[in-house]
Image 1 (tube, rainbow, N blue to C red):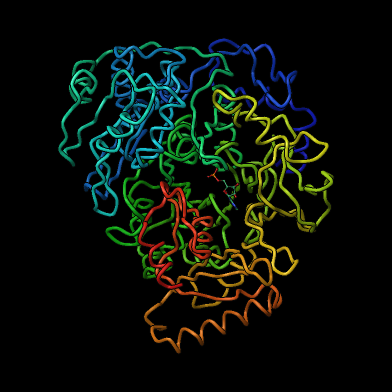
Image 2 (cartoon, helix red, strand yellow):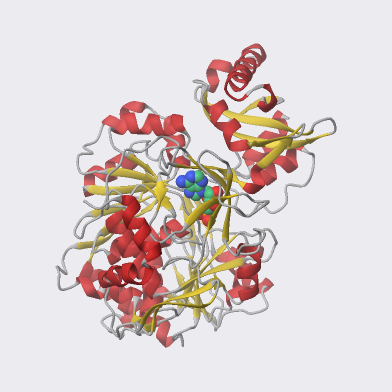
Length: 628
Ligand code: AMP
């Protein structure tokens, strides 16, 4: 068994040799001439001269190994349907979709914007783009028109692929009106729109622009579209992420580096094997969905589950039922989903046969210790916290059981992943920090294969945003605080913009949240810094209770507030004590589960909450206002 540190060291110090070996995991139609071209830092070009194709690696390559094996398993608890596509069926569907896109004039380098619910045709569209060498840009289904319009204008897609509607928790969200409005608002409308009519919401097609997916599918069924072999560093997709300015920031991903990074991660980090089933509960609109619903498992020859539904419908056992029904070996979810389950009957964790499951991976936000302990004890399975960003495309920090199994520590995403030369540095001096010292988590370039290659259409923004914040050093800033403990375990302490300053003391809101959450009555919390004329800022906590009915009266609430404050006092000191602890039914979150801190702060300070496109449930913000 290899040693984690030595593999990591080799991936940095003998970089070319290391990645030369990893590149063998994927098919190269034309071998690369050079592992890395880093002559123009911080831009890295991986596997120069090599030609490959993501769709070929995900679909075609696995046909000979068993065309009848499952590839894509769709489960919808929204429309109550399940369907399994074999590798052959996936191949046929992807080819039909590629043929229809080609007939709409889509070719290599063209953009296709995908605005879809979690249904199989969305995955076919992504893979079909990859097959044609077109660049897909998936925009989370249901995003508001204004934001969709700004993404259309930035990506300038030739075709948009969409559906009549999505459904969430039984409620239909019509997509078509949002899309029509967006196209009206934008300056670069697409030539055509392919609409998958699911029969959820009636609509009028726009003449000369909208085409019916089912009709096209019938027309092109049976056609095979040749794979377009792409230069390794040709873009495969653009995925927008929120930046500090209003202009959307398109994270551009390459082709060959991404394929290699995902293939290696499936082995070293996730331990997924061909023929097994992977369940990732993210959405194809997020990076986790791109990497670990679509490309990662398929490139590794695994079946992947595409789940349309919430974790609590029809009941809080649905995810575990999927594990049982499809013999899932690797599962990937987010702390927010698990916190939702904490409010459900714990017996549901024991109701299904989970013997196939080896581990539950979690990412997207800090995994607080109480949640980690709760789910780990409930399932009796290892919980593997892993830390990454849309920009990196795959984990920066994670346990890597495929290299060397090591015990994990609750609250820590473990160790640096091979390829990432990650450091904790002092944001003032730019120097590396030692054990137990808190600093900014930064990556010394080159970023490894699979990480973003630039900001779509804006190289300057790539350099200015990510590589210019640390004095005297060109390093990639994650904008997260972190530290490494004496045993080499890493801890992420929140975003650098989540720091508050109370009477001259710098406090991470994450630490206060952890402390609030450690009270037995609290399910989760959000702590924000609110302007205060006396102290600069004060911490205000919003807590969601496990059993709100037990604290209905004002007296019970104040007693609990005092108790929680005492807990914070004892753990972090009185300086960190929130000035108020308010009890709410739910926290305002994005649809990917991130707490909308800026909006909460704005509401607390009586300002306009600003851009709320990504909010999951606007009523949470309303309730917050009322509680204040
Ligand atoms: P996104 O690009 O939307 O996926 O957000 C990335 C950010 O989510 C990171 O910069 C972190 O702030 C946070 N994040 C992701 N995974 C973790 C994790 N395992 N622990 C703590 N924070 C995380």
